Length: 503
Image 1 (cartoon, helix red, strand yellow):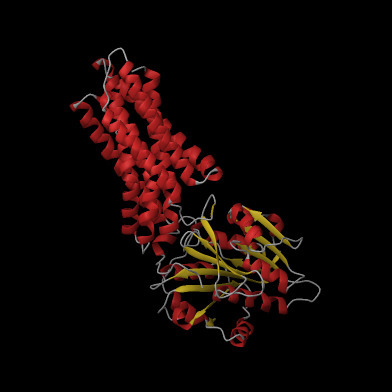
Image 2 (cartoon, one colour):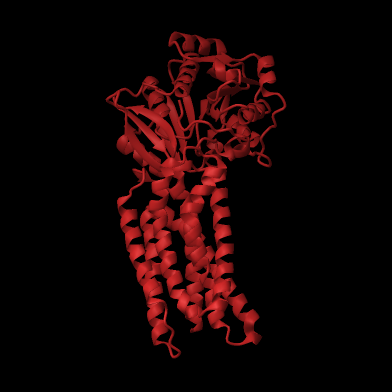
């Protein structure tokens, strides 16, 4: 086989494996979320498939003609890649938990076979090219390097271009279809080669039919995404009990609730607590100007819209990672921007700057990746950056989701106590006793917190939440929990999951 053709085959199959590995996270996310466990499972499964496929490919290359096996390898690898889409969508809804075992099983069923079959191509190509034992090292080293280059291109192109530009299914079908066509073309080439080879025609036919069937299944078996952003599988669900009610669902999580007819309606309990906090802070300000609020995380823009309507002299700065969510909020959730609302698209950690110093009366932390606050937004260093944007009497409130034994919640409280002089908790009594999981709002400030006024607001609207502001009680609650830092923030390991919605 000509050296450029051999290089192209190794490059393409290696790239395809890594494209599938990156896109696997997109396909699994609607069912098991985007967590460290998800990416760990995908990487582990694909690495195991590469090892298995390379080994089996080498064994088969020594036992039969590799030229007979290589075209079917591409065809079946491409068909299996396409089939991963309907397979995951068929089995994904049955994944009733996000436990590591569940994620590994789903990743294995969807992606082990295509990754293994495509990985078998490299040793088959190597065997075909080994016509001189004195050049074994040269051939193996060169093709191995080319395969690695293909994998790198697959990673960078997928992560930086394809995910941001195209939906997942067409990309997978295009990659799989290209492999199938390449396998059929390679079979024709081998039949006309100076030393003809006869690839298994029956196998090629079966593989091609399987690829067509998988493509039809992928096209008709749609997933739950209404919009596939660079970060989330997003959809909007109408509330049957409230005509204007809309719920933004990101992957497995009911993320935000907006009432199109009444932006002052705050459906989720923790969001209502944030609304109370803004109202309390606004009440102690001047009538000439409303509160300046920084929102870390926009999502459905429920709270920014609430603040904008209830406090018309307020200013809002919203830091939202995902620009597609901003567009979705504009199109379907009633977001209307004004000169009082500034939206910055980008990571919150890099979006805060010098002009924000001593600017905000309230900072609201409600950024999530799945059920976890992104780890770099949980650390003492980030809390220090947030504190720099606050005025002396300002309040930082962060939403935390955790379940008993509440190790992440305790660590986040310990972290905020290392930066701020005063900390309080707002949640149901069961959660404050550590008996139940869910949303807990943690408040922090260098000035005494307005716990009495906040308690009065909660009582006035007959809320389920109560305020825990006693220093000794909070110290007992935290115990020996570690302070999270940029050097040590094992958020995913500390977090105990147990729900798939926010309330």
